[in-house]
Length: 397
Image (cartoon, rainbow, N blue to C red; front, side, top):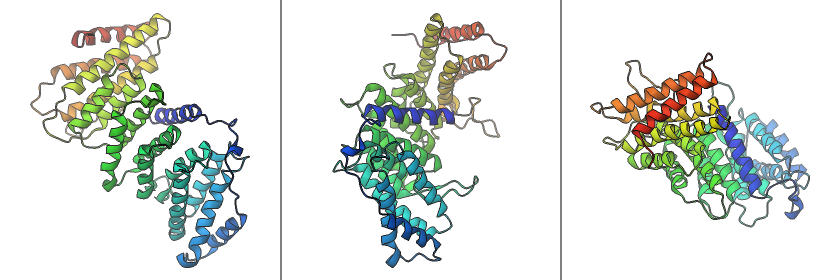
């Protein structure tokens, strides 16, 4: 499912990027280019050869080099090369891992200059520059990833800037989407505890926000989907407000299924939190999601468009919300207790018969969809049977 997420983020960024009028046809010459100072590169290369970094004499050289790299993005010939140039800067940062003082100085200056270009209050920069500056922010770390066993350590100031960009008026949707994608990446590395409340509050505002007039409803739903994934990566303690917001998205038949599904999966990532949570809305929402997924697939099958992988993903998300995110549908401790999903939030004395039966029925259909011996008619029949059972519990209004 991780690869699925990466692909969705890439597609989303491309969609909003293009919808914002960004393309190679939009001449970079409309924006005044900055002139890269090649002397800054030469001085920085010499600086890397030094044994020690001296802030008093070297800070200006580091700032000049950060501006040199970002100025290259503004040249008229660079509009289609900016992602490659950005990755080159990321490589430079990683190469400084053994020189932590110099690394930190460059990271600080780069963050400041990339932030200025992302916010772009004077509208001096091509949209491609602003988007890639935002993505650059999300790849500036406190400690670099130097081996497969040592992940990068997030830079708190970079996270703060991404959060600010998401809530900032006037930066444009392409920048906001890039900030959301970047924040999801940072969340996968681990948001520092002191920043978690602010990140969660910002994601909550994205989830409850109405679609602005200049944004398409589909684009708004995609942004909400990424906000869900940021929350899922953070695995916060469940609270009633958060559960209510996520459940509201899961049950909303007017928004795209991918957003409903990711909202359901996010419920499955919540850790046990407040006692006495009202789990009824979440349980109903997850059941209705599975019901609607079956209905949509049955209608598609009537048009020769049955897609076993699609219905499996949707049912798996509903099941993940119920029982946890494990690919098998359960996260179980050594003593056999469930530690994730709505099931984990239920009090021990709760009557979970209906809930458990519904989860088991969904799991059986997923098993049929996974079976190599099952034919498409077998799979369609299993989906139709599950739809009938869920309609008995959650009839359409």
